[in-house]
Amino acid sequence: PLRPGPYICAERDMGGLPYWLLQNGSSIKLRTMDENYIYYVDRYLIKVFEKVRPLLFKNHGPIIMVQLENEYGSYEACDGNYTLHLKNLTMTHLGRHVVLFTTDGAFDDTMIKCGRVKGTLTTVDFGAGSDVQNATLVRRRYQPSGPFMNSEMYTGWLDNWGLPKSRVDTPVLIDTLRQLLDMGASFNLYMFHGGTNFGFKSGASDNGAFQPQITSYDYDAPLTEAGDTTDKFKAIRELIDKVYPGRVTAPVPRPKKKMALYGITMKRMFGLKTLRQLMNHTVQSTYPLTFERVGHVRSSDNS
Image 1 (cartoon, rainbow, N blue to C red):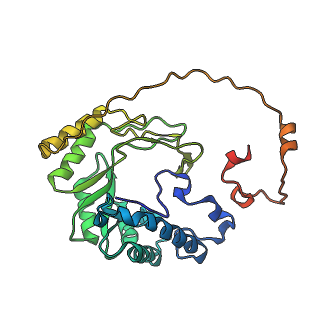
Image 2 (cartoon, rainbow, N blue to C red):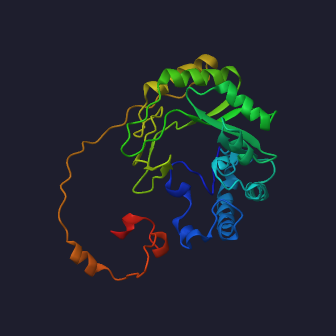
Image 3 (tube, one colour):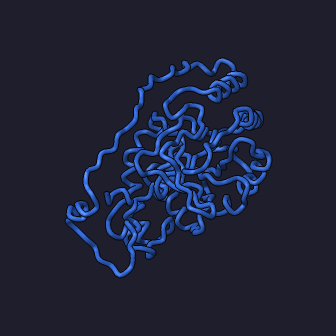
């Protein structure tokens, strides 16, 4: 499956949307049919679809499904005209034979109600230990027919600065996967391979307080951020081989070589007075401005 956006979440800075969309302050309404937003959405997606088209399954490529937006039912706008526009734009440029789908939380009717798009496959997302049967019932209320799919089956969870490392017990994950397999459901493991949020490009959660994500996106995934296998990887492999004997034929990846990391000595370069002298452009304002309003991607660009 491919998630072209424009909003992708994935714990990326502003969900992958470019910072300069906010240069005009609160006048733009993100993820809606606001002309100040949709103009750039169309330009972006049309370019993406030019690159995607040759890679579609119908053209003997690896892309079998294309997602519209991401968990849109969790966003307050609930603009059905916007999601319908994305569907029509995608079909116009990729054709009518591409499987389009949406992804939303499975335990709140409002999420699926606002996130689903008529004429596309409604999928849900949840993690290990969730009530699979209840998720099925909620989804069936909005799409009685068609395959049941968890398009984001969480194998772990993200990490925030200042909080303990997230862990998902392997037996709990395997039990949930077994339930999905027993009922003939489809699932996409998220994440299968841990990754990295390079630089200052990670996102943040808003659970009543600002909670930025750390640089690592290891996610307690079956394959670590370094690409090494885990007990979780082995358990998933054994489960699939048990349900579908003879289908698991790919070799197990070997552990990756690691480099030794030593202490880093910080050297003084210059003081604040010197830094001020190096500034060749200043902006004066009566009130504090956001970084976007003064043309900076993020605070790190001011260094």
